[in-house]
Length: 402
Image 1: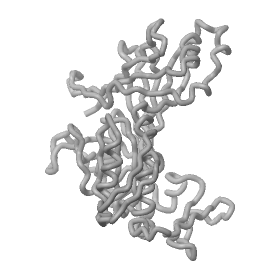
Image 2: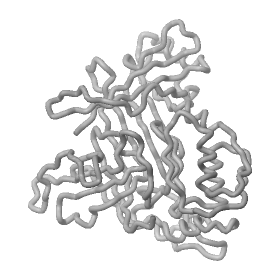
Image 3: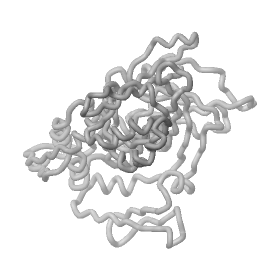
Image 4: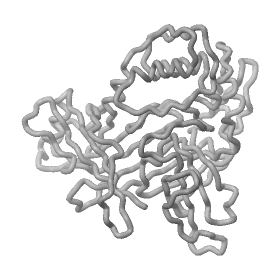
């Protein structure tokens, strides 16, 4: 089962004359990067084909925004593509870097020409929710109650909240004035929430507060499935066992389904995972100021930095996270075409099956660290249709520590 995407909406201006600019006339591509482990918002880059007049209007209007709907349509075997729903609908986005695009006056001599301009945008709802300042003095409560107090201040988005590992009842939890994201991070730093680290991510369809690994009791959003099954097939190979798989339900109920050729998969071992997933600098965590863990990534002192964790709050959850959790085992980079984007959210269980007995050790449960999706417009379409290419970064779950 494959999906085709349609991008609809308008560029809105505070001055309603002339009329808004329709995205159907200017959409080129959209890149959505969800770095679940390191960021709290998606990084969204929207490329539009505009003339100098349109660019001038965007630059000169401080209240210019976009209203966008991303519709996903199922392509069935008989190409009857009438079954659809929305990844998100009528979401307002704000321009966050329009001052960095080429100055409109530089283009005025070519007013009849079209220019491909890339904008960074952010959800207006997410920005509003993040700006809300909250504080409180919570009496005789636990961490779950404290976080529910914070999430009650947010609006307009469903929230996936995993029950904390820290079930202690506190006489008092003091929340100093701060925005909601920083307040959750404050609770994690001072009291501890999860054993495997806390993930807080404001995605476009929903918000997530959950364990980074070992998710057990996650609720499932309406019309969503819990598992994403990905089958990796091989070309003509005597070791291949791939005979075709349908999209039927398994014993756990319906699931998302993805397929990839082995040529679209990269298996990254522990020794190489630093450069693939973390970057050029190594961060080493120690439990106290007297010792650190051995740096297995890089022996060059010029390219290594060390960060020490001092447990000043006697935070048991953070101790467990640092001592037990590490980037170990197998990592997978995998490219998927025209996947249902709902199946790539960070609350999904990713179950990978390699249809070749030589790769059997890589079968199993994975958790997602990051996904980057590129939506590229289809030339000649009467509607602004796009194909989706998603690059997933996954870590294999060696043992479930709950």
